[in-house]
Length: 292
Image 1: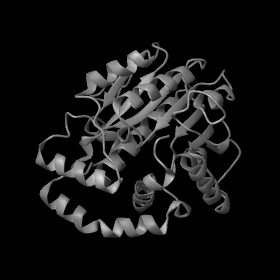
Image 2: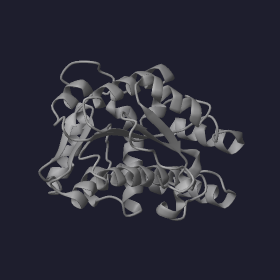
Image 3: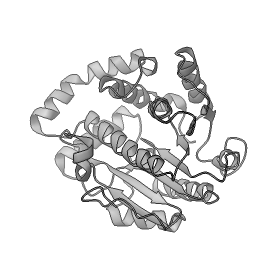
C-alpha cells in the first residue's frame, strides 16, 4: 500500500476505542492512544452535537453496524461462510462474528504485515482466537505475490460463499486506486458460488455545505492525509462497481435501516454502505425497508 502503518494509526486507535465505548469491542483491542484521542475529541463532539453537525462517532457507528447487518443476513441465509476483512486494523468484527457463528464460519482478518502481527498478538494474549479465526498479512494493492488478495483467495475453499469487507479504507485513496481495488476484489470473489463485497464510502453528495466541508478538513487532519470523495452520488459509484466486475451493486444510507440499527446520531448519514454481488441471482436489500 502507499501508506505506512504509522500514518493510519490515529484512526485505528480512535476507531478501536469508539467501538469499545459503545459496547461493540473487547478491552484487549483498546489502546492507550485510542483512549487519549477519544478523550481529547470530546469537546469537539459536544459542540457538534449541540449544533447538529456530523461527528466522527456518528458515522463510525452507523457504517460498522450496517456492515454487520448485511454480513449477518448473508451468513444466516447460508450464502456466506468465509470472510476476508481487508485492512482490519483493530476491528472487533472477527471476534464478535466468531463468537456468534462458531466453527461454521471462517473469518480472516488481513492487514499490512506490522498491523497484522500486532492484531494477532493482542487477540492471542487475550485468548480471543479460536479455530477458523486467522490474522494474515495482506497488501490490498498487490496484483500478485504472497501478500496479494489473489494468493489469499486461492487458498480458501472455493465451494463456500465468501465475503470481502473493507471499512474505513476507500477514502484514503484516489479514484484510480479504488477502481483497481474493486476490480481486484471482484476477480478474487469470482470463483466462489456467492461473492459479497461490503464497504463504507463517502460521496460528494451528502458531504457538501460548510459543516460537512469543515468536518472533511478536520478528518483529513486527523488521518494525516487527504480524504478523497470519488463519486458524486450512489448511481455513479454503483456503476463503477459494475464496471469493475460485480454483477449487482447498491449503496445504502444508514437512515433507511434505522429500524434495525436503532437511533442514529446526527451526521450518521454522511456515509454510505456498499453491497455488491458477483452473482445476480440474489436480490439486494431494498433501500427503504431493508427487505428484499
